Amino acid sequence: MSYSSLMSIIKELLFLLPPALVSLFLYINLIKWIKRKKPNLPPGGLGWPFLGETFSYLKPHLATSMGQFMEQHISRYGKIYRSSLFGEPTIVSADAGLNRFILQNEGRYFECSYPKSISGILGKWSMLVLVGEMHREMRMISLNFMSNARLRSYLLPEVERHAWLVLKSWKENSAFSAQEEAKKFTFNLMAKNIMSMNPGEPETEKLRREYITFMKGVVSAPLNFPGTPYWKALKSRSTILKVIELRMNERFQKMSKGQERIEEDDLLGWALKQSSLSKEQILDLLLSLLFAGHETSSMALALAIFFLEGCPKAVQELQEEHLQIACRKGLKGESGLNWEDYKQMDFTQCVINETLRLGNVVKFVHRKVLHDFRYKGYDIPCGWKILPVFAAVHLDSSLYDDPHHFNPWRWQKRF
Image (cartoon, rainbow, N blue to C red):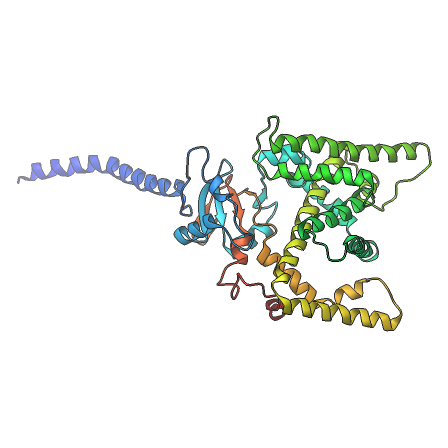
């Protein structure tokens, strides 16, 4: 090869070098961009178009199990997987660490994100659907009302009084439904503390019947046409709100006439005096708290009775603990439960903890991801729904010995 030919080839290479370097640079950055734009999502599938896997996820199952859907998906994908639930792309978590992170970062990385049908039936000002500053204000009103001083001086004696009313209503050698009695007890207690409505009165009983219809619709498919449970629940909601509004107007009338100042003996009075909430906001607040307090407490009571029926040893230890407290009070000439009595019920607290763990009163909650983050190598995208499933953690054999067995003594080891 001649010198001139070699120089010609070198010139051509030098001419082609800048475009080649530019092309290589663009290619490398394109690969990086593609990798960055394709997040490492948890494994899973989206199920049917539009419907996703919602119906399979909500299929009824025993309270003491996580359900076939969760068992199959955890077995196939692990404790964190993706799906399509309630019409949205969703991350499902059965991981104790991630669930804890979600609960500890409310308002920072996550916010409440319940289906629209929930706000339609509980109201747009319900604490279950509110986010941000308004949610915090509603929550603070509720927490300030249920202060430690009120719990000790008022609520505890009220719980005892309502419990005695239930026990006295039982006839000797007659059968009764523990679930129905638990619901009645809890509703009467909530109605008293929210609106000073006394148990057994016609107005209270009417409200309780409407509430039963209302609850059937909350947990049903959101089909709003005549005859469906959801449609009936909306009508019952309207009736319940009219009762609350009537009592609110009565207090306003007495105030305007100077006959009565608003007392803080119930949540209605507290909200009227201690907040600047509108009438609509107060109505939704009271209804949502009636719903939240009644459903969780009544279910926990019924499950405790169910579990104790199958564990005579726990019943015996409970009786011994309570009899010891009663004897000490008798020697002091005291009557009625007080806060010190409650604090001495160590085994009773173990029974409560185990009931909530095994019974899974709240199986999961709806949250929405506010910021992208990574967890255990997975990318959790902003805007996705995320469901921390508490039942799956409570029944995890790696965290609890024999998790499907009712064992309140396990909590003595933990504390």
